[in-house]
Length: 335
Image (cartoon, rainbow, N blue to C red):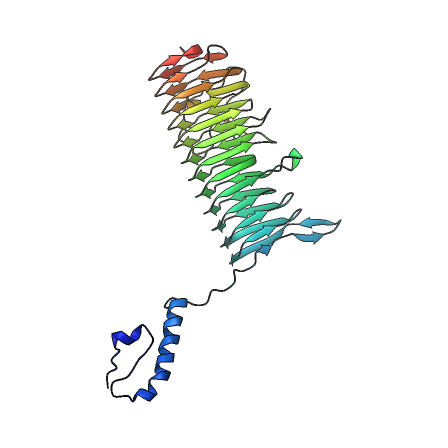
């Protein structure tokens, strides 16, 4: 016999089957109340949530002499995260990490042929090779002592999120989809043969240089402070801003006697680069799709083989300009 629920009784949980005696409806009301409570607490089809798995501590393997050899984690999927403790040494090879990765001060991590689905926090050193990072990468160097600054190096990697923080960075052959905003400390920063979809912003500590070579910057570039910078063999789609830089800066081809645009420790573009077959110094040209702006005094600026689509705005002094073209206004020493 079909069951009919009277609308006037649903709100109070009263249910009566058609033809059932009144005295037998109380258990039915209790069952319906329990069912409604369960439906409100647990979504349909949902299983009880399990506790998040604890991170895998990758600390290294004891070796003779009281040192630690690297601990290798390979060919597996890590449901939690990875923690490399202080002084630890770890290598991930063909690993998928579902959680976050943390490298503590003086810890070392190598990520090769692997994927990290969470975020990464580097306070020690991390090297990458043929790896993909889905979350943000935070480089977090302690203020003192500088020798323990966080270090990020490697190539043939893809960063789908942001790369930001403060530390020493040496990257080649990488693709950064998000913004790149890292203050360069402890060591000169090198970004070579790489593609950056977001804006690249690099403040530099005193005495620290930034080298951006043979790269494709799809947004814009800002370099602040520091000294000894070079931007060569590179295309910048937006603006290029040099702000409060003290000392030598070269954009485009290097002046005679100042060397050439290196890559991976060698002279000239890396193998397979579109400009590899061109003759220097034209192959070292730098193009700016927006404005090239120099802000502040004290910059020893050298421009040669530079093509600017917009304005070229320079201070009155400290500019040496060779073969330079600009589609907009030219000011100061760049007239």
